[in-house]
Amino acid sequence: MLRFFSEELLSANRYEPGFVVAMRDRAGIEEVKLYVDGIYKLELVGGGGGYGQNYSAVTSYFYFAGGGSAASFVGNVKLYAGEYQGVVGSRGENDYGNMSTGTHTGENGGNSVFQTVSGTAIITAGGGKGGKVTSGGGMTGGAAGTLNRHDNDTADEVAAKTGSGTKGNANIIPVQGISPVYSKYSDSYGRGAGYPSQTLGRDSTSGFFRLTFLRTGDLR
Image (cartoon, one colour):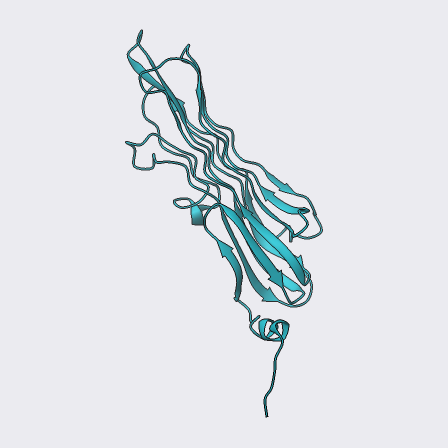
C-alpha cells in the first residue's frame, strides 16, 4: 500500500530541538517557511562599514577612518507558522584615497532584517557606517550599527544578547578593524573595516542570519 505524506507533515516532523530551519552567511535574502508555531532562536548580524582614507602632501601622512561594526541580535523569539525572510546586509566597500586629497567616505554596511514575507520588519540589525576623512585631515570613525526591535512582544528580553556595534577608529597611523559586540561572530560577520596591514585590519564583512527551532509553547 502506498502512503503519501504532505510536505508540511514531513517538515513538521523534522522540527526537533536544535533543528536549523534556515541560515545565510552572505548578503542576500533567505526565504523561510515555518510549519510549526513555537520558540525559535534568532541570530542576526548586520554588515560592517567600510573605511575612508586620503593622503596629505603637506604632512606626508595617510589619514584613515575605520568603519563601524554592525548591530547584532541573538535571542529567542515566538513565531507562528507562515512565510518569513532573513535579509542579510552586505559589507561596506572602502574608499581608498591613495595619493589623493579630498573627502573619502567608506560605504555603509547593509542592514540585516528578519521580516514577514510581505516585508514587515520584526527585528533589524543595522549595518555599521563608513569611516570619513576630509581634505583638511579631519577623521571620523564610522558610527556603530543600531538595533531596532519593531515588535517588542516577539522577542524574549532576558534571553537576548544584543549589541549596537562599535564606532570605527580614526588616526594618521593604521588602526585595527572593529568587531561587533556579539563576540561569536567577531572575526567573521559584521566587522567594520580596518587598515589592511593590521592583524585585525581587513575589509568589512557581510552580515549573518540563522533561525533554529527550540520548542513549542510560549516564551518563559
